[in-house]
Length: 150
Image (cartoon, rainbow, N blue to C red):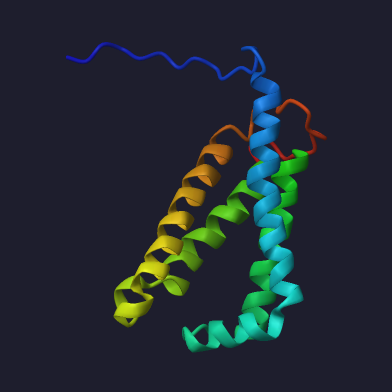
């Protein structure tokens, strides 16, 4: 029989915990927001790549995914609707990772590059899930707008 594991509420009271969490949010969310901005700045090229990958309505799909990345990234950085922001990033990564980085279906010379992008996105998906898990908590250095866990 396993011993009972009690849930301990997550707190940001360790040395520099709040500051490190803010730095992590800025790095994670800022990078994804910048990536989303690039969806708009390079819309034609990204839509062409999406079309090559068989994505329906490639231009609209790139714009919609760019919106999810900008909203999600800035939401994480600012602590605004953090659950919704983390969920938007997670859904984007869940959909985009296997469709855009299908390393198993590309020619050998592209396989390593697509595998690297696939694994990077899996790690980012894990971070999105972790942020979603703590979204209902009060985030330090956050604007604090939200809807319960969202």
